[in-house]
Length: 160
Image (cartoon, rainbow, N blue to C red; front, side, top):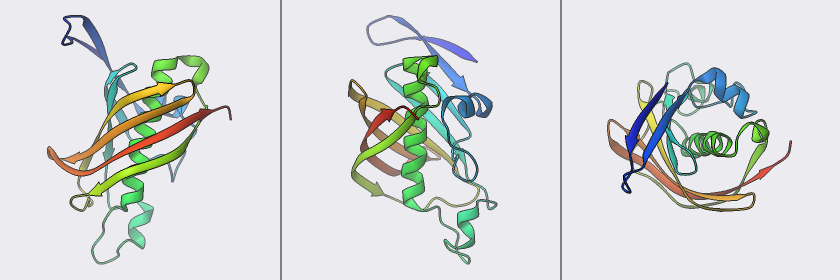
């Protein structure tokens, strides 16, 4: 599904929604490590919003923590990275599908409140810059419009 809008320069842009079937064509992650459910508001070479519907059925909740389930912060960062990988593939086109995206750095990671079963985690990802196969992103995780996590990270896009 696509929607059009004008950017700050008055240029019409198309924002795209990408469902799980297409995500699985774009990035190599699979259960139990495919963590995002869809990506919305995709603006090529600019930004996107990944969606993770957090449920009690997640395998990590068995041990983190059984009496008070909390999504591990490192997996929130991974959700951000998977959302960014979809943005990269959508930007670069079909020849980049299935390539691997390796973390190079994570900076300024902050966790503001726990993410728990029943939350809809929105991962607002913005490209800061790219140079050849290295991309840098800034992301915020939000639940109910409130920031729950944030980080800046760099990734390298490589052939499988």
